[in-house]
Length: 120
Image 1 (spheres, rainbow, N blue to C red):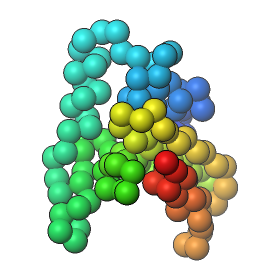
Image 2 (cartoon, rainbow, N blue to C red; image 1 turned 45 degrees about the vertical axis):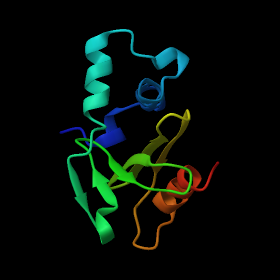
Image 3 (cartoon, helix red, strand yellow; image 1 turned 30 degrees about the vertical axis):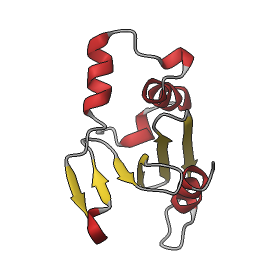
Image 4 (cartoon, rainbow, N blue to C red; image 1 turned 120 degrees about the vertical axis):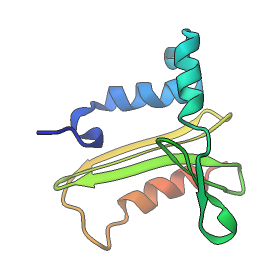
């Protein structure tokens, strides 16, 4: 079957990916082409929403917060959920995964998003 988000990624894979974006010690890109690619996928390509405050990059959603912009992505399949997000320039990142059914009133993504956007 085709991979979907974190279905084929380990928690270490997700953390390594976030460290590469945040400049964490283990994930700091040493190759200039990798650094350029990571910069490119965070560049805004589409703006929408009220006053065009919601921005899309090639791979992330970007929202403004009182503490600066956040980049995040969430997804789910039957029985799996994942959320990744970070605040550029701060080192703050959230990686969350769950193995469970997704329900309309589920608070998984909202909780992870809140951790990212409401933390100083």
